[in-house]
Length: 145
Image 1: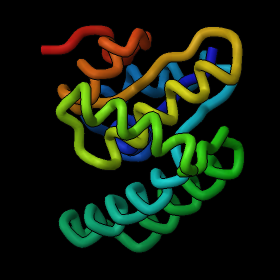
Image 2: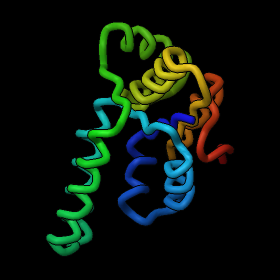
Image 3: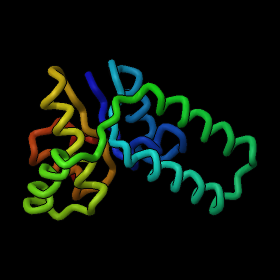
Image 4: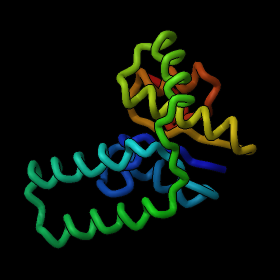
């Protein structure tokens, strides 16, 4: 099984939040972790924002950053290309999605098309989760509110 993580789901690996135990459990079962190239910028921005807001110790920040960067090296990464943008066009015409959310959904659909086998799309944004389910993806969490 491939676990696709958008940024909202990926951050749950590094910060204890609602849904963290689900993400970590699926991560352990996955054969591979996948995400979009845009996730790096989104994740680093969130980590630095959390550092400023929570004022956690430099050693903890360094540990989180290092752990993410090490994990990043093992991910299946989807680049934003003209072909991916064609999928984005279709998705934003069909669903109410923000730009990066459309990139994540298009990326997951690209992986599902290219690599046979099970794929779970993990995200914690209701509109994106609904769009993923409507697009035929198995999701984490399984149900929308």
